[in-house]
View 1 (tube, rainbow, N blue to C red):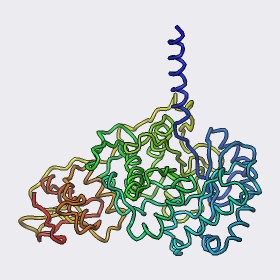
View 2 (cartoon, one colour):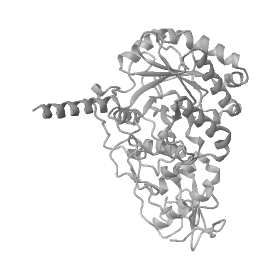
View 3 (cartoon, rainbow, N blue to C red):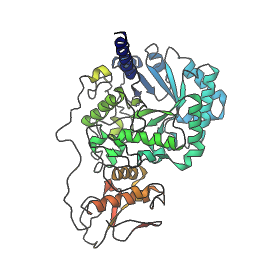
Amino acid sequence: MARRHLTLLLVLLSVLASRSDAGSVGVNYGRIADNLPSAYKVAALIKSQGLERVKVFDSDPAVLRALSGSGIKVTVDLPNELLSSAAKTQMFATNWVQRNVVAYHPNTQIEAIAVGNEVFVDTHNTTKYLIAAMKNIHTALVKFDLASDIKVSSPIALSALQNSYPSSAGSFRPELIQPVFKPMLDFLRQTGSYLMVNAYPYFAYESNADVISLDYALFRENPGVVDAGSGLRYFSLFDAQVDAVFAAMSALKYDDIEMVVSETGWPSKGDENEIGASIENAAAYNGNLVRRILTGGGTPLRPKADLTVYLFALFNEDRKFGPTSERNYGLFFPNEKKVYDIPFTVEGLKNYHDHKSPVSGNHHETAPVTSPVTGSGDLSKTLTGNTWCVANGEAGKEKLQAALDYACGEGGADCHQIQPGSTCYDPNSLEAHASYAFNSYYQKKARGAGTCYFGGAAYVVSQPPKYGKCELPMS
């Protein structure tokens, strides 16, 4: 009997431990908007929703005071425009930490400092200051005996990756490895910190809605995509993107570094050409993501890596520039009403259901034809004989990469020959690899109408294409 009671106790402790080890959901609190509630009302709103963490894009005193005593864990930001000053002088970094962190912590529970944001894509060329700024900020935390409480990191965009397909072959851009990533990852390891990553499956879907499954992007039921390198099956684009970063770190021998997804989200509204931006899709993405994170479990490549994820964003921000979607990532309107109803807690998930419209989806069946097609999917009146599908180098890196990911994944193209050590791995360029994958897909689909488009990332040619010593097959 005593043994049985002990067994039941161990089972109970295991269940409680697994729940405590599950991931955590936070929110990004941006303020580029009119008529937002006061910081005190925002703090109350965040707490009332059960959100455990908040990330801000500065260190505004009103916000930090409002969060005092709330129990909400806070990440503050040292803006990109201050990186050079923080890097050049320790005194500046120390004074910044004293004014913006020491003055509020621990009543305001600051747990991390984001040094810059997506610095590698900053047009002001602040990358060269990043590592020194991170080190100086950490030195300041040591001075005030806060280094064990507060971690230092810097959010990166997925454009920092050179390769992301398959996820197991993820790698960082070569020009960033020695000057930035190795010293950054060394710093994160030495200080017990983590890598911050901004991941947006929406961008990949919006640019390639004709080839990427909406269900795969929204965590809905789908057949999955098998990673040709690891044999692992992925059921969401989010997991595939996260694992590509894990693999990139692993390739540099930093398997022990943890990751926090510092931004992710889906817009509830967009311009006419912003495919997929809708309330239904935003609710599905964020709601299913919350369920994915709070029910525990890591990614296929890192099954024990429970993630902390920050949804973007708390409010719709009407003063942002750019397309309509930029102003419609919010979970709430400025009047504090929800844009759509999703839970943020384990308790709330008990009654949550993703309501999928019977007409949602994005694929259309096309009948195969024997005539060659143009890049727009129209029948060509001039091409005859054999045709091939090649990448459009002017489509841009992100569009090409997303289309390559689809072709080699869900699209079922034969991409073995562009893996390291294989015949067509060289030249190791995105355009060459994408051309091989697009052509494989095109030939597999019998050169059918629309099978060499990939959202404008590809077009048909009538002369045999060749990349280095690699010739694209005709079947």
